Image (cartoon, rainbow, N blue to C red):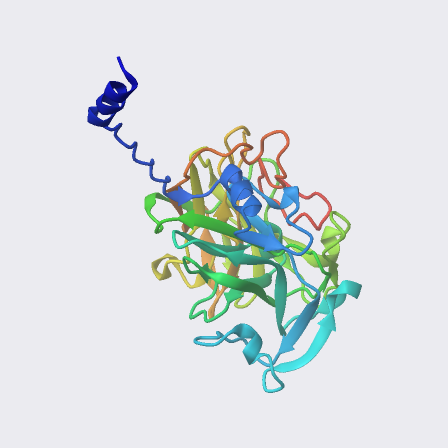
Length: 361
């Protein structure tokens, strides 16, 4: 065939069909995808993101250099957060690089080290870390122009802040401390199932069913893991005939009767209290990562409980909370509790925060 004929034949040949790109999977991003978006700069920080910040389905967030003591909590609404931080709202500023005590009954706002530059298909949600909730430090994420706490809209670009309000224990905080975690989602949230769990007031190996926080205790140093004596901060709670009475306003650590298992292809979150379950709040930290309870004989949900305005009786087996499950985009590279993970509470029973000497049933 001559060169001219071959050119004509090629021109008449049908063009190869283009292969459509496979759409990205929807759901919560696991550790592998979190690493990818960090590499691509969608989540970034001065000095970079540390490897141990990436959990099986979440990312730890770190406190920045200063804490603003506020007159009151607020939401920025249509404004950028930084534009609200004037003398009408900020009482004084604390230097976290040298360490500072955040006192009970006060509200603080701390710029976080991490910043976001999300694409339009990615949104995020924040939640206190388990260790934070178990010491009764109320922490919420705030973003620019936010009309709600903890929710980060799709396509958000800007800074993140932590609003911190210690309830029972004052805490010594420093730059780099991790009180919040971020879960990033592709697409809208689509729960796949729910699970209601109940309260365990009949433990098998001890007559202690929980702990009640002591008021007017000394400061908890957030850098001193396992260095605080349980008796200095907590008093044991014992049930009579499978029943306890919550005192209004007091803070308790209790545990679920059921073992919680989070499959490797799902993540879960403890839902806000349902009013029909009682006049109390059952959690402050609610993320459960994939793999929780999978490879351990134990794996209970530890509950941070506070009664509201009236004394309230809790009984063994009483429903106290609800888990909402949703799909991951893919299984995590390192599930919660697996070798090489940064898991603290894998296989837990009734357990206090990591800041205290080991005290578990």
